[in-house]
Image (cartoon, rainbow, N blue to C red; front, side):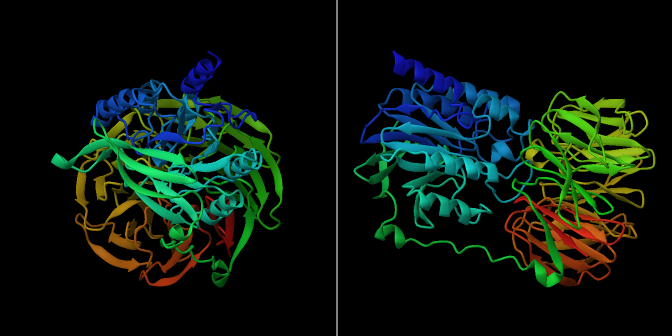
Length: 621
């Protein structure tokens, strides 16, 4: 009875205590051989085939004598609350111990900034369980709220080490995360060094929708098939069965309703056979010093924001919820304020005030000189979008489906507009009496900046919200609005009417936009690492030049920045390229780190500040 109660508590609560105390749930104590139903990339959405087939899979697993169930991320598609509630309801019906880790589809597009996942599964995305003689250590890998390479947050690395350090002498450690431990993770070397230190026997992962064995820096990488594989008549639905016995691992593919088929077997831990499999080289070392850049801050947490600049003072937020005011010359923090969750919104400085939205469902303002809180506004849902200030008014998305104008000095909401659902994540643009922003609902909105009344909204013509202009900064020139989006189209819209003027898909633009200093060129970054300059005054697509940074495939949404005749563009692996504004000639490219760049911010004195997800801030004079 005691064991049953523990199992039910785990199934319903998903070991949420992990990260808060040292109690690790234990099942099948001292069992030498265990069999695991191993899922990855189930992608459940309301009414789709995966919802139906996952329900069937739960029924099948419940009827078979597995000891344990693992789901290694990508539970759904958009990370929406509705999807997460649905998948939670489905997997709660497993009658066996269950471990769930988050994937990029939970952390990248989440409308709740990962808070709903935390409420339903694990508060910090971390979980540990003992099954038999094995200690399973599960953790999440970003990217967080933007397209980028995966990154394991420093606080998660600390938790992983503490958990493994406290393992019992008889524990055989197994790592569980959605991403394979290759260069898709910016701090891959740090995590594989750590796992080897504690003699980790293998890592379970998904992400690439294929069943295979790999060598991840001398650690066996066991990648599982997705719930749905193939297409058309060749479509199958199923999962993986992992049997651990006698220091070996046996991996089977289990198509629903059919007998499992063995796909590979290997030794647990490093072996001569594993050593014959290829290992991906590490990413190149940073070389930022060659362009005169200086590292001015290495935070102990991840940074998801850009910086606000006030003379020598910088203001930025981090992944554990600290808003820091730092002197750029000395690197010393002058004051800090704590939010209840991560900060994804770039702070704004104006008129002696710093204002920022928080994933803890708030917008707060502070006196820039000493950090004293001036006001705080609770919001219905987390705030993840950037804002903008004009004439003492702060304009920003304030959670899913809401946008507001707030008096900066007092915190008074001057108006609030409801536009449906989805976060308004990219920085808004103000032109004349209009404020423009995109949202993760397939629309671009144009509102009256004084009243909040809608002038027009533009629809991208699709139904897939992953293709929304939700993270783009609209650019305006010559009476036209320029946007790009993950649908890989560049679109030009008439500012006054919202009428679409032209739309082009020739270059694979995604989310990064810019505008030349004279307003005569719209700038877009392609998914092939190119910078495209387009005439902003024309009624048709007229290309001025295209310049290649030499990166290849890239999807980082960092906006393009122009300062003193130089265009700055960044990629997903810590590289920045600088181009001549007039000609597009590549001046230099340099590597600042391994993780994606958040923002490139230029101040009035010609200084350029660059922040990276791995917690680094650089200055280029």
